[in-house]
Length: 387
Image (cartoon, rainbow, N blue to C red; front, side, top):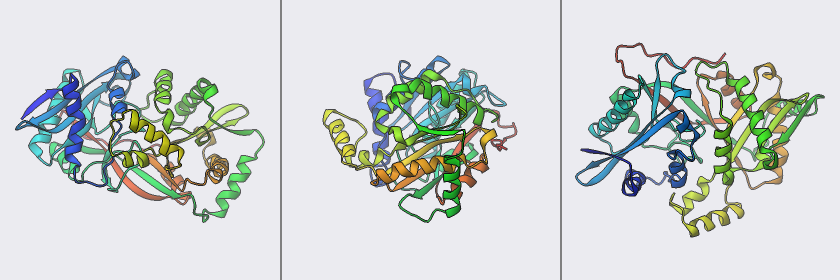
């Protein structure tokens, strides 16, 4: 077995071809966009390199690439735990414990050399909206940015010594279904028209204002969580720019009370419904044209909710239903959308799980974020519950 660091065009190409081998006969797999992954590992495109670093490797056996892995750390993330914690991700491997062990050992050693004492995975060197967690239940074509993997990956992670740090749940809502609770819509209308409250959707023309408002809401909504790290303006601005094709201004909503931002909602388009037709994540001129053509032809019928946050002072006041009151008007106008996936919510956030169920959504997916402690004698502690 030969571990090769990804450093040039040949190894970059090998890194992207490993999944093609793993999923050759898996009709549920949809390739990731190659440019999106390369941007993740570009210091010029990913602001996380300012406070961290990353490496990638491929595994070669008998002149054939059979696995890959990336390791990375961000000091803004790693310092929020009982021990400095780095990460691994973009893991792909044949069903072979020795091969997986070689990949995990390589990532672990590099992280240890950089002062880390634990490794989370499989996660992303970016915000946790994309490619985060090990798929445990719900082996079907995933929405854009959601992790897909073979069922045997769970055994590979656990055989190495990873344990579940937290579970991630995703929910599906049929938005053509009129059977949402009547009480829900009554509360929604009441909140939407309540004096002092205003609801407005995102506008690219005033993006800096909305990014700053999101950072303020995010800090107040999640700041009490033990491993919270403040969001970086430039990181969000870059991410927004790179994700333009996924966005619809009317799918991103803000709530203000007396002019102050108190809640935020964002859903993106499920670009995977198009990528599945393209059958490739490597875009060229013609595939880009086809992508935009299919998008314009309303091929995308599903959206994915990636963030819903309400600052604590305003939780339990029906703010979320007020957002859905305004969103409902948008969805009726854009009637080709028929499904909304809410992904994902950690098991450490029971309030949000209850909220999504109250919308009439059904749990459809489970992913796990795994953790490996380098000190095998140290007590393993799961993610703390958000009260």
